Image (tube, rainbow over all chains, first blue to last red; front, side, top):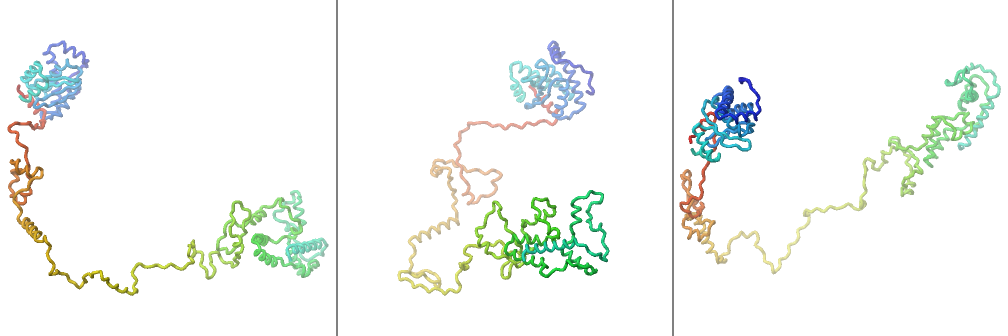
Length: 158
Length: 373
């Protein structure tokens, strides 16, 4: 891969156990580091005015090459929701996936965005891309037992 | 003189010739021919062993009787004495002339015999030694040429071309599966055509084969020719006389009557009413009524009495500029509306805005980041 550092192939289960044993900040730093490299490569190929489909294609290619699954985009009202399908890390690796996407977006488009997992079913994870303050509200709603539909409705009516 | 008598005479003549040939003859002035020339070219050489056939060839004379007579005449020219050739007139036989006459007679009597005689005519004149020999049995071996000649005895299988003229062909006898003609007597009574013309040539006064073709005789052909009756009216038939009118019949007005009314005829009883109704319809057509008709969707009584809130469809603001004539107003329908339910809202419909995807990913991201909760 051009412009990439030397890589090491690690089994997904070993990485998942490592992430499960580490604290949240360590996993977040590890994930952001992976995403920053992906965003840098995507930005070098697309530029600022890239379309949604082009971004999904290139960023999804980087995630697929890293072994994190297939990337998708959903738009619920005004909210941007990224989907990751068939991730080998499972539900234990969703925090790591969110950290990778935050680092990639920050490096690619120079925006500070918080990625929050709102739903996971049938091997598909939905991650909402929000501003950090809104992301805290969403985590609270989810902690209170609100469904991901209610969260999206609240985001649309906000 | 028949054939047997001719054969007997020829045999006696041959016996005399052979007997005289054995007597010693005086030396002639003619130069003798070499013996080698007398031999046929197919004679085997001297080195070959002698055979009976070679000996017989030397003994048998090769010249026919007529040729021997010619040789005798030649010898008389050369001065040689010939005693044996003094023959009487009764011994001379005109074989060719009599044979032809007999052939013609036999041809008329039987076609089959005619074919055989023709074969005899085609054969060369018999040699003297052949006449003296006894006839060989049929089982004896024969040369191939003779077998071929016997094969020619068979009647021709194919029909000869018409250009060859009339021919007498023997009818095949004893062919299995052949059907006999029912009118054998009629066929036997037919006379042979000895004219010698070609078959395609028709006799004088008769139609040719090409003209006849495959003519089929129809029934009733011998009857008088049919008469075709034309359906058109005859031109020369005299006109029929007019029939006298009956007393009970009334004569119709003729073409001289130009038409008109009889002054004594009275008008019909409803004529005044019909005239008044006609004038009323004309007046309505000129001045149509301004009141609109009642819609057929509801009963007339209900529409005119109980349903007082009759609303007419209000034209849309953009379409109300054109003036409406009296005829068009009358043709416009009247709609009966449902009673109003008051201020209660039955349902609320909201038209959803179509999703609009931003052009760039950055715009989409900024929209999502603009959400504040």
